[in-house]
Length: 376
Image (cartoon, rainbow, N blue to C red; front, side):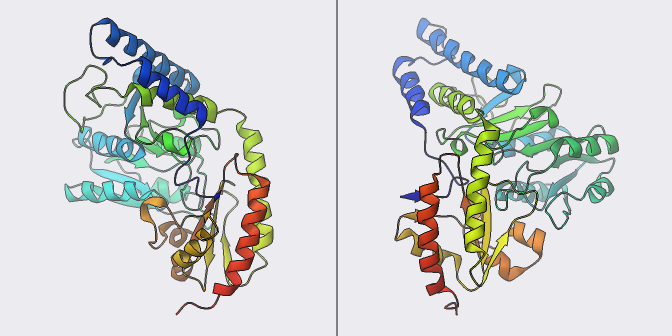
């Protein structure tokens, strides 16, 4: 098997799974309970939370665990908008966001909020002048992802934050960091709120993290009982929290070394497939090497993906949550509908091997010429 869809999800690492199983087996108490088993579970959970807080140099109270980045995005956007609707109703997002952001914006529009979409330049970078012009006295939130999930465009969050705060110091800045974490260095101090998911960094599915600076006020969007967190009531998922903490600690080791290795794999793929006709590389100088997007101009993406799957090679289309749709990111960067309809996403990891890439390329160069030009 050759797995090249790491941006959609990753397998759970052995060490992370071991942490999950141990917490599940040995810590059965509800951390909200007052008895000894509950206290034992709460102590373990608090230790995991402290480890995460130390990793990012943030307060433990600034961490809320969610089911994943989509829930975190909902918490950030809806929670901040409802809390600040007396101040304003204007929101700014980029044209390079994950589909969950746009779905949330649709809802917010339906209840009276106004959405502006900031432009990007031809390399995918946020147009700073356009961002400045869009920020108004009633702008309460800007949401821009750290790394785009389709083309891997990396945004300069610190600079964007400076622009936002200069134009309107009260405007909150949120970033979906899901595709950045474990691939490039990130700082929660560059934003007011952030979203990440465990399953992108060899952690379990079903848990994410929402970071909220302690000065930010939000309206809860979930209500219930529980003492752990006002934003996320209920029984904390201790084994998932422990596993997530382990996954984060492992994900942040040797980032530069791992990125350089992935970059070499990325360059090898580009060198080989660029020789083929009817294929376009969708990459700019701001793309991280872990995400390689290509457009097959004469082959349906799903046809090619299934053809490669016959050889146990697993690729993705644009983003796993919008599989098969027109790529909004390619449209935003290249403004080419045909190019946007034919995207394939090859996503790499530091555990991808050179041998896997060599075999992938052999299959690619064998299958693609047979399909090229056969599209109706």
